[in-house]
Length: 414
Image 1 (cartoon, one colour):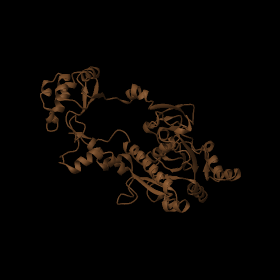
Image 2: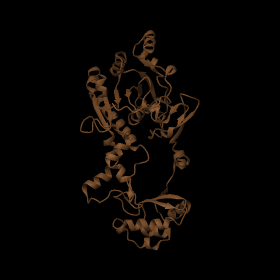
Image 3: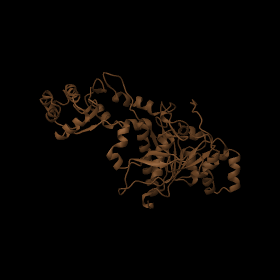
Image 4: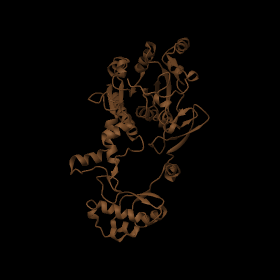
């Protein structure tokens, strides 16, 4: 693939990120051609030592694999003065610093925003946190599920009369990563135009609220419901009937836009056809009940045929196996195979989600072993071979051949 796809070529990003939001945001920049240098402790960051479903490909965590392609890896002891000096040299040559430690950690390391500006006045300094850089929740642990709960997302995803329900994927982390990349790109554009650096702050809380823009705006400005959980099968408290998810004989199906008459005809439910479309809000629970009674009579295949004939907008509810086999997912090449850099295995990853002139950016680097580029990066900074080897001997930097085995993650409360 030609260099025309590398729209951020020449941009250097120093990534002090762990967990998911920060690494995923930096990966977006790496996909677009930026030189992303991911800095981790000598023992590896959290994402190398924990994997969803306790599943590893070889010895490679899937939390790490999903968010760390197109990056070079530097294992660095930031507790040492020599390690801090290496980090300062990297910042001096960088366009972007991205970090998602708790507020105050980078300052204590001597690598905070004001300290970075003294090194490089043009720097774009992006911080991702749980709740923001200040305020009453500044010191609270920020994590996807906790912020889903705080932001109302767990409540609004729940269903009446049952309790609240978390979204089944780390959607706040993922949306936060996209916002982080957008903020960095906007600040980079200004820096290129004016020479002025910028601090960019993105929080999980802001991302979680932003995900609910339509719902929250409706709630804040209109007649407020007693309960924001989903009423019956209807997919949201602010939605009309029958818009929602309904059970079939062999699965579930989503029903979107339609007239009640056509839906009733498709489901052989005359009571449903008799309800005026103008009553879709006030009678939505009744619509939900009648629609469910109808969908339960048929298989998914029968419902798809009946709904298509009556112009009812619909889609089957896919599990992940069905997603992988879905013809549109395959046509778009949303799932791609990438050779692991750590073993002979092939990783199945999600491709970059945007097309540019009909093409996706290439994967130049599979997720890298810890410290795979430590020597190269220090050489680029002007360190001699002897100095690099001395830093390895002294435990200032780590390299792939001496990377530690995976350790069990232990929660650190400080």
